[in-house]
Length: 465
Image 1: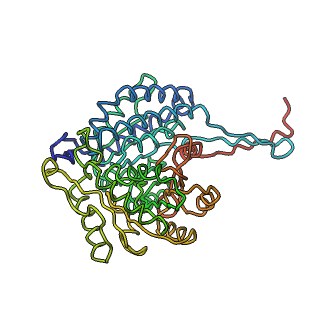
Image 2 (image 1 turned 180 degrees about the vertical axis):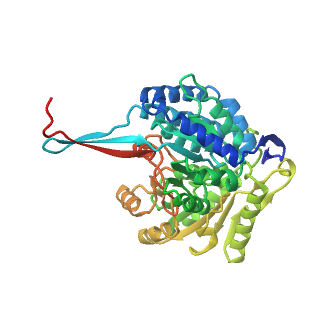
Image 3 (image 1 turned 90 degrees about the vertical axis):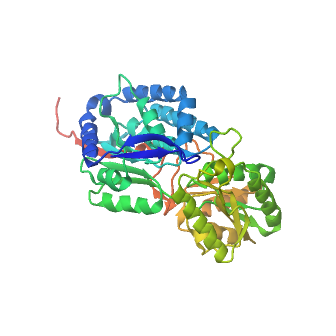
């Protein structure tokens, strides 16, 4: 069977792709198991060279990959370029990490010595989302390979083409056959077959929380290690002394980049009463100046959402907010005129007056829809910020660094930015708390997530030369 990859801006067919089956999953896992040999698993310098050269090839092909990504995903070409470059950076960083896997040796008792050493998990199943498919693949694939694992990738069905192109660039004389594998197809068949496959030792999944829960349930049967980065409903707290000239453009990009289809999007803007009216006015003005259009149009600053179904869900969420008494300050509608008529476009939307308990505030909408909320004190701001089941990221905007540090430590989120937002670095760990995930990506701990620690204990008492 095959499935169609369509441009969400125009509805045009980008390509037709053959869908894999459980049989292809079996073959891919078998190949990955067979490739887990010392030539790969025990040669850190070889893994480093492979990753470094792969990063160079990706960096040399930014334009064609970015254009392909925009055609299948809809995001602006400028954003696609950022993603391809960031993917190359993630692979390059992992190439350096491959040579930095460290264990330790211990003197445990007289003539008793211990070695604690990291070993690869084995075969890792990597299930990739469609919103930032290249970066979120490279962010996990790089350390998985650096640690000596072999990998089977399942891309999202909306965005398999750019992923396949980046994987094609991995071809290298030092990359053994079977180390890196790709299987295309729907999550309910191919994805679930990967998760439950007895040859798979670890699973990395990035996506929504309900699917992450399903992955955990399936993986539990095999007692497999699971790494999850899931949904978010990320608050930004703005105090009267915030650096507003810096904050406003950053927040507008974070609100409407990728048409809001980003688990780290600034979907909740919490504003102190004393500056609320000013912030509301400036955000609404900024939202109304967002240029919505096809991602390949250089004048566009926001593209379409991924599908008709996604647009319908966004529309239903905004209509429900209206019916519950919230006020739509701008947007709140599908865009269907002119060049937008055949795509899945939704206007940048800001809603105020939604209760903390409302669906708009509590649920991840995954679209360009922002909840604007008011607070009177630092204590209330903290209660609101922690008032959802999510805990992925947050932002605090104030010139009072003591206040910022207090809040950063009290907010239950894996990353808290102070006077900035959506700044991610390969060197620094990221991941979710609460319903936003398990485990960490990036940084030193992100590498060790793809390892098992083994203790080897030696008693040499009484042994003579």
